[in-house]
Length: 241
Image 1 (tube, rainbow, N blue to C red):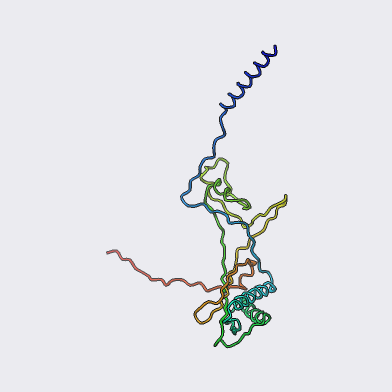
Image 2: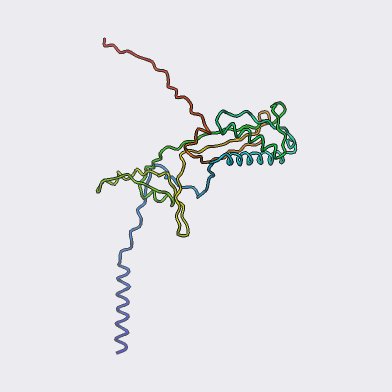
C-alpha cells in the first residue's frame, strides 16, 4: 500500500514538472528603436535661486574669495592691485559692482580706480529663457528616462491612434520624493549665468561661471530688453510681358 502511494506521488510530481516546463514564459520586452539618441536625465542636483539683494552680496563674497584664493596661489601676483571694470546699466550690474569692490576690500585686497598697472576684474551677465519644451518620443521611451518628471499628455479622444501619443509636454514642475514624502517645485523660466574674469594684459588669471535661478518677474533686473530690429526690405514689381 505504501508503495502505491509513493508511486502515485512521484507520478503526480512528474506531471506537475512537465506542465510547468510547457507553460509559456512571459514575453520579453519589445526592443525600442529611435532615429536619434534618446535624452537621458543627469543625476539629481540643486541650483541656488536669487531672491534678494542679500543673495547678490553672497555672490560678491564668493567672487572675492575666488580672487583671493587664486592670487594667493600665484606668488608673483599675490600683492597685485585690482581694478573692477565698469558695469552695465541694469540694477543687478550697478549694485553688484559696488558690492564686489566692498567685498574685495573686506578680503584685504588693494583696489584702485585706475586700470593702469592693475589686474582687471570684470563680470558679465547672460539671461537664459526657457520656452515651453516638448519632447517627441514614444511614451515607453520617455518614461524610461528616469523618475521625477511630471508628464502631461495632450487631451485625446478615446480610441485615438497610437501615433498621436508621441508628443509629451514636460511641465514646469519637478517632483522630489523620499521616505514616503513628496514635494513639488515650480521651475522658473529664467536663469542667469554670471561669468567673472580676472585678467592681466591678454591673459586670464581667474575665471568663474556660475548659474542661478531667478524669479521670472524680476528678469529686468539682470538684462536689458533690446529693441527689436527687422531686416531691411526690398520691393520688387512683377510685370506680365
